[in-house]
Length: 535
Ligand code: TYD
Ligand code: MG
Image 1 (cartoon, helix red, strand yellow):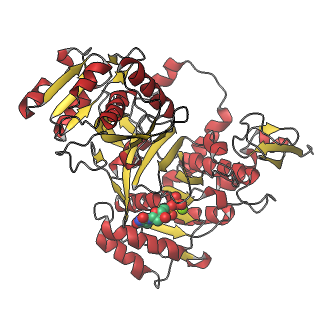
Image 2: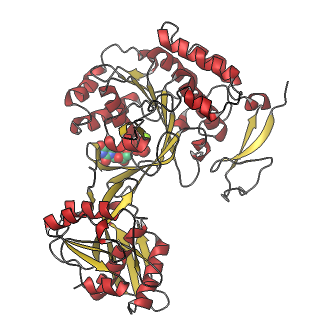
Image 3: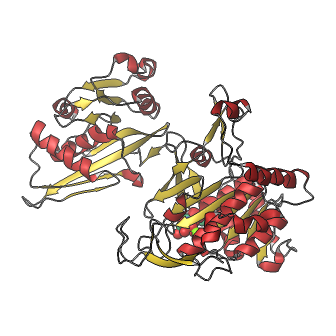
């Protein structure tokens, strides 16, 4: 019998050490190593202990399920034969577009990944059957709300979903379901949310372990409140869902592992099994994980390499905007983002090209506020950057920003001092992006620079103006990618003046759009030219 070994695993990054250390040598986090034990015999083949457990998972009665699983298991035993890529492609791999289960929530579907037809045209986006997705985010940001809305949407499309809530009781989820179901008629029909309320007294197919009756009119959304992995799998076998949502994975435990729920050992074991479940039974598994600042719970970092897709749900709790971003995606691009707004009745999609931050009062000149179209993946988003300068102390002037890059801010201040003759050494400078959106696109340089200069001189751009361009250290305004798309978007949203880098070819501009709307395009070569536009 092989000896069970002791290891110390970092909660933050998952690196393992042979002995305890005060600081993780890999990620430099203090006090993050946690003792864990592992059995080398199962570690070599993590599926060894699992294969039997899942073998009977697919309903033997279901014609295709058991067969498909048998094939997969058989495949596993013959794996290890190297084949030329050409043979694999000839066998048809990659010929058909990847199958997806769309939610109908476009912002989420796009972030999960879009399948392409053989000729390259984008088809529908959504969750890939048999894939494992991890949704990470700070507590209270809205992960449960997003996934409940997604679960509703999947159920509405005729997909059976099992939503396992390990943190909230089924009643709490029911209350939330009612809340998000009431307002979002596009996602959840009113009649469905009413059923949630009325469903409780009905005999539930899962009533024996604290579950709620099917809450959807077509009985496709199942709720379960449980934290024991074995019992959850038991319910999965009964319900046979196509999608399993676990909210959150940090509360799930395996009774035969002595470590506490949320510890590295439990997380790794439970997650490996859930991913294996996804692969063998063809169920898409969505896991929710908290990222905590103080690191009391194991960060989902550990799990990132186990799953196919990692989505990060970001935003500022004090702002209503939320962004879903793919950090890792085996079935799609990581450039895409989905934009939502948290309201009284759950998350609402922010439509394509929506303006983040009010476009109201754009007709009155506002020094220190500039609009800029930024690219996030394939979509263009208009955001407003603002700056304020105030009297500070020479040598101790404050430079603070929110939603922007602090290094970029420092660089632009230096450019303004050196190339535009502004004296800012004793001015406090504050800059922010409106609406809590993180602006990291270098094309926002010019807008930020004009916001600072405008705040300093108390001059504004003409009403309804947008500015875009990258600023170089020698004070030149450099060209930017996707100019046409950005200008089109700005024109579509009613901008009347557009400041662009001079270096662009006039053919890059959508002349049809700018002429039709009477938009004035101002080309600037240097920072000085740009400041001349302020008036
Ligand atoms: P929640 O989804 O529970 O966050 P997480 O699962 O990431 O911890 O909820 C996040 C916050 O959103 C919560 O503080 C309340 C708020 N909220 C709304 O503003 N409107 C709503 O309709 C809902 C359901 C929640
Ligand atoms: Mg939650």
